[in-house]
Amino acid sequence: MKKEYSAQELEPLVAALGQVFEQVEVLEPAQADSETSGLCISYERRMDDVCSVIRRRIWVDGAPRVLQLVGVLSSADVAGASARDLSMYRDGLIRDPLTGTYNQVFWADRICGKLDQYSLTGRPAAIALVDIDGYSDIVARYGSADAGQLVCYVANLWKRYYDEGDEKVVCRVSDHGFAVACFGSDEVDLESQLRFMYEKMSRVCISTNGMLRRIPFTLSMACAGLNEPACTDAESLYDTCRRRLDAVRAAGGDAVARA
Image (cartoon, rainbow, N blue to C red; front, side, top):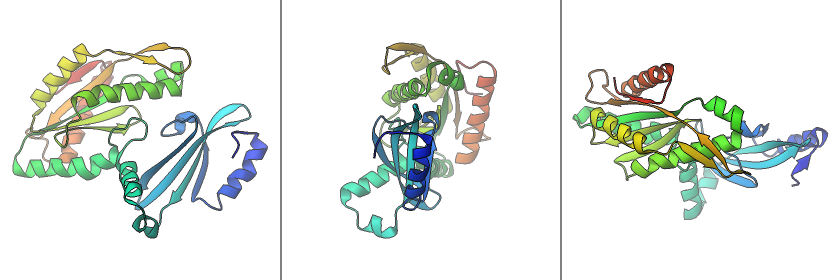
């Protein structure tokens, strides 16, 4: 498959691919979950199906685009897969392809279930939501490729501190937001840790796309813990933390909030 097309050439290609794949889309680079200069294959859960998602960077009338092909894997495909393929399926379902952190599926399936268990047994646990301030402005100023690199940079900063087995976990839960779960800690301890690390953190990402560029950034953060009266399960814990994060963002961001 070639990489450069005119709009007229692309139309019959999309129609032909539509006979093979369940979904064929030509996306703006910023619309794709991740960008690639070549071919990227991942596995994702969409509703109740396990899908293979193929993305390839192409050019249409001189503009960069991402050709995305989605195919649903049958139960026979999964049953007959090798151990390596099954590992790829599992990682594709629970890992964010851009940052390598866990994704929303992992948060909903694993973390929320564990938070509910901790709530029922009275054990301490806390979460934090971390959001990149002014992300849409960053995309407009620096472009989607540099903005994606910033997302990876921020993810790696938090993975250094909160990526310890099942006790400390980082998940990407939105285009520019992460959730941190800490089991065995309360919201007071977590807030103190976040403040300390944010003060020491380098808040400039050096982009390596083309010419080196400095991308300054700030973060909005909020915490909540299961020992708080309003936080009786994973859902209410997340809602409480989300409201606090919204308040931080409305006040201008670049801060950590607990209450």
